[in-house]
Image 1: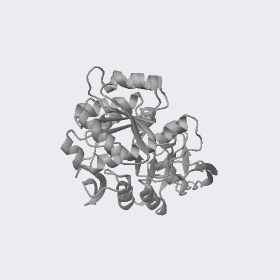
Image 2 (image 1 turned 90 degrees about the vertical axis):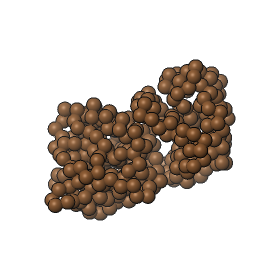
Image 3 (image 1 turned 135 degrees about the vertical axis):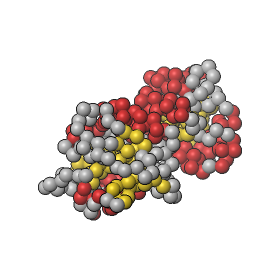
Image 4 (image 1 turned 120 degrees about the horizontal axis):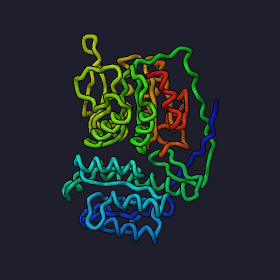
Length: 374
């Protein structure tokens, strides 16, 4: 079976239009500087609260809005649904300091329609001392701008890589699906996701509530610490089974969902016949920690590829491509979310375009296709 995909290859023009909403003038200044270091981005407005942001959106179109949570007059969570009602096409990044409270509110914002949540440093010193936040805010702003412009009527805009963002030229890429093995009974299921992932994961496990979970499930979702705690709690609630962040040295048990903790790669290892969770803070892979690649490679090594079902959900970039290639080379099977149902078809698109998928599915069909292997 083949699917036709439109690809694109150049940079954004005109520059990305950004609205920054933050009550700190210092933070607004840093965000402007970070973003405008890229010639593809222009901060066209800054305001100090959600009410002012709504007035801006009523009179001007932005590609991306960076929205703080805790602000006077009107906070970010209150402003978010009003902003999205007035401009359903704009993509919103919630940027808040990293506290358990803000993580919970940020997760709620994702459910209300924000596309991404990023933890911003809590001080000017923190802003100047971290390259990861600067990289994330610039990269995600550019890539989400592509999606905004596509929704506003440029069907040829297509996200294909970190460096290839937009073009008026297109080319056809064929996607071939690998045949399913005649017999496949995996011992473990592994899921990778990023942008749009929390909502997609919630949808999948809500649909699976009441199913009989007999296999362990490993999830790597690109999120920082504290955020992954909230994600695990949410998935436990929606699936009705034990779901928690993986703990270093914990024995893997059937019928449990393990979420990679923020800032740690989650792998597994064998020890005297037991399979244990193994966390590490090795260098980020594909600019991510946790990363999908080390998780998948570890599971392939420990369980044997033919005993692993991999699922790739919505996300930016190509994290997981190397791990899933290794998995398929060793007899494993991969399902991927299709483009139409993905917030960003970066990670699943990379897997699909490299011929690693046995099934390419809309999000609503993924639970039923997983059900036989739980």
